[in-house]
Amino acid sequence: MTNAQSTTDLRQYWEIIRSRKFAIIIPTLLALGLAAAYLFVLQKPQYTAQARVLVNSIVTPSTTTATAKGNTPNMNTEQAAANSGPVAVLARKSLGPSGSNGERLLSHLTVSASGTANVLQFQYTSPDPQLAARAANALAQAYITYRNSTALKPLTNAIRERQHTISALMAQLPHAGKVQRGVLVQELRTAVNQLAQFQADQQLVSAGTVITNAVAPSSPSSPKVAKTLLIAGVIGLVFGVCLALIREAMDPRIKNPDALESRLRAPVLGVIPKFDARSPERSLATIADPRGPASEAYRMAAITLEHLAARDGQRVIMVVSPQDGGGASTTVANLGVVLAQAGHRVILVSADLRYPTLHLIFGLSNGHGFCNALLEGMDPERLLKEAHVPNLYVMTSGPEPKDPAALLASPVTAEVLTTLRGLGADFILLETPAVLSASDAVILAHQAEGTVITWNAEFEAPALQKAQERLEVAGANILGGIYTFDRSSQKETKKRRPGAARPQAPPVPREAQKAAASGRSGDRLDRDPDLTGRLTSGSSRSSRAEAPGRTQL
Image 1 (cartoon, rainbow, N blue to C red):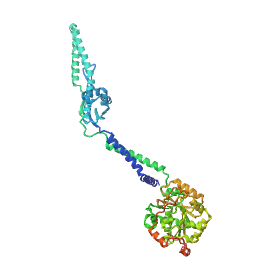
Image 2 (cartoon, one colour):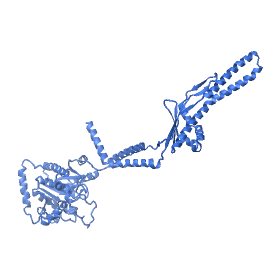
Image 3 (cartoon, helix red, strand yellow):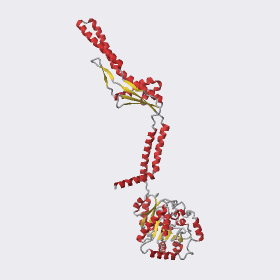
């Protein structure tokens, strides 16, 4: 169970990274660009030369004997001495004008001690490789000179002391008696021996030895291009991932069917992949590409809808989207085609009296339609138009009324839908405006037996909550949702002003224009008096054939 949960979490994080890839790539590239600008524009190449010095023990004269002993050097103390001002002053004298002042020399100097031997490493950094080598050697030699002077000082003092003692003994010797003379001679011999020993030790003093001379480096020590770019890339990547996670947490959109089902508290009937629907005729994916992924997705949605509707005997189903662009009209058209191809008698009603789209998708004329039935009392059966799919009939919206909401709220709407039910259709699908764009869908909610909500991944979650609350207050029976990426039915979101012209309709397909001209897809007011008979007879045949159960897709 834990492994499955971990796998799910990893997949979710991977989906976040994949969907937010630009939020990760852009900061990473920006960090790399800034690092590259710093490396190649602002930062000058620096060269580091290194000299190594072996630190010897300092010889200290004994105060009681003529011998001298060596003290083991403390490398921390020697490291501090190498970075001292006196050493820098000595080095500056040897370098001449190029040495600048001692403080500047020390600012470019790095002295480190070896962990296994008494060795000091003098590293000097400069834009000039030749100067770096000369300065490193000068500082190493200056340190040895300074340490030698420190080591010779006690021996020099001891030699002076012994010379003074010898002079004093020599002055007492002529005036001394026989016994005293012997004592003075003995002390004189000791002082002479000590003086000779100290002078010999003075010649042997060596506080340090240069074991590696610095040479001019051939390549710069800084900037370190690969290391700097790697660090910048990692920083940019981490920042980008954090930014992607923050944006994902703050994103109010519902971006997967599981989240839609959880918020809708109803099943998701289908997931419609995004397909090319830039023109009305391409919106019918079930006809334009019957074996494509979108067609299969609509068939699966139709199968689920059929089962849900058969459970409670629901025939009048409203398909609506919370906002414009949810693909409600495209979904109505494709579900109608799939159900009709499966042998069901289907009537599609364009109840969107503001911005109808259904007649454009099927290439039908919109001279008479649902509005005529409501305003003029025309027979709904005579307003049905044949689509180019057997068993599929369309009632277009007709002319735009002055007050669509008031017209739909009249009792005539229920009478028209009751008449359509009496024609024996298996499904009556209603195309309506978006819930949050107009009140029409809320008005029709109690007239429909079931409601299907289409959802576009670009919508934000609050829109679904508001739409659902409005529909539930109106008594809508929400059967489920359809998750769609289709944007072809996106309508104008700006509210129309009174008296403003209706938006220009997309061009009608050429085949539909020919059909309309020949009378095959126009209004059926005077040309097909047997339409009701065909629907009714088909219904009786279907009832006999479906005695054990409903026909499955």
